[in-house]
Amino acid sequence: MTGLRRTAICVAVAALIAGLAPSITRGATPGFTVVERALATELARQLTEDRSIKAPKSIALAYARVYMKRAYRLDVEPAKAIAKHLLPLGRRFKDSENRQRLQHFAWSIDAVLRGADLKEVLATLTFAAESTFSKADKELFVEQVLANASRYASPLAIVKIIDLANDNGLVGKRRRDLLSWVIAQVRRGENPEYIRQIHVSIAEATPNFRQQQEFLDKCYRAVRRGVAASALAKAVAQMQERQQTTRRINETLDRVLALYGAGRPFDEAVRTVMPPKKEEEEE
Image (cartoon, rainbow, N blue to C red; front, side, top):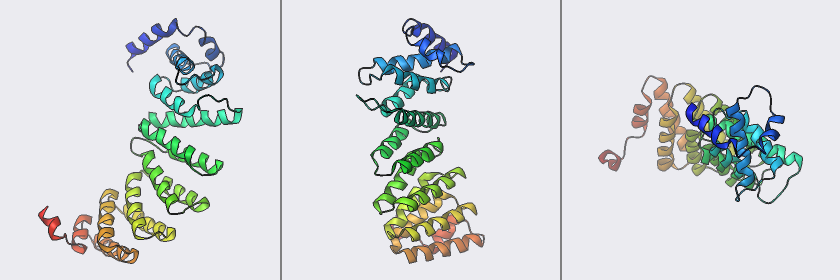
């Protein structure tokens, strides 16, 4: 948002926010600019006056104060979309539940500021809310996923990994361990979309979580040795389509990695071990 646009917003909303502004500024930490306070007040006004939301004033002000800390970087509309998604319509919640939603609001805003797609952030919140996870597991999931979501780390890709694990019957500690493993890779700079693709391929071959995890470990050891995760995900998908069994996929990958370790480019090693089929060559 340009400086001129921010100035225009301040002027435009000044007459509308007279009733809400004192409530926000009373609880505001010193150091916020007039623009930041005006944007936060505008958010509170919209949350209370929008007929599709109608948030109680006290709750709208609480969201506005969280937003004010980030208002210099994020427009009102995406902040409003996140708040609207989190605010259950027609209900008042206990203080503890409101604090939880405010924390989710803060994590969500920060994820969007790091470049995460707003729709994917909202989908992550929906998945957690509709899941059968325990309360503690829901909090762990939302915190870990949104805290590491960015332009380069899709939160929805992580959601899909955990969703597939759920379909395979993974629960409790093993599901938490998988989430922790995925987050550890993301923190190293890995794209969770390629983790998801590899996970899908190996899950097609075996429902056994231990075998899936061992295979993921093998793949990401290779990534740390220099194999591009995108190329590896593509190769593993080809192996799954051709080999079907976990044992044969592992054997094929071992042969490819042995050639790669001996100095062959990875793509060449894949072609050597798995020569293209005739129809692939024609394409």
